[in-house]
Image (tube, rainbow, N blue to C red; front, side):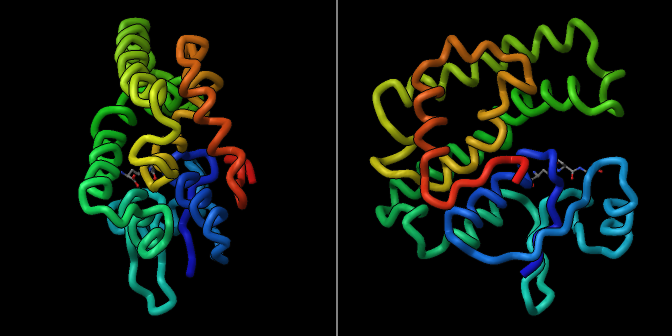
Length: 201
Ligand SMILES: N[C@@H](CCC(=O)N[C@@H](CS)C(=O)NCC(=O)O)C(=O)O
């Protein structure tokens, strides 16, 4: 198996994290922004949607979209709840991560940290992203104030998925994480899981 993976990206990192937690071997190919490796991967057709991550199976099949990859790798593991409703709730968080949380928490960090995005970081946009991102983090805080994990009573793909960008929301995105004590405790629970690896590993 090969993972076409962007080292700096939370979407790629969440897949690397699950691979570590599952103890699965995978050949990780780095395709960072503004590198020839990314251009080559696109030109080779390995990134069907033009984005990383993409999982390339041993038989050559390609699976794009980070959360689809999590579902594929997590199939049959304890990271996918056996109860159908809990499993569907896990997917609710994962869809929400892509269509709400990423659009504020990850985008603000991208505008601050990627030189090729800085021109889009107008003061108005950054202020709006800060407010909207805090509102999204407050939704997670509300759940985690009363529960250890985002769904059910055990860690699931929802936690791995949302950890990807939430754990750097303060350091990269400039969000005020002191407002979210339950999220901070949850971040610690994820980081204590056996097989955990950090974004730089
Ligand atoms: N919805 C996709 C988003 C993937 C995505 O936006 N990847 C970015 C890095 S975070 C990328 O590869 N960008 C390369 C480019 O736009 O040239 C997923 O979750 O996998």
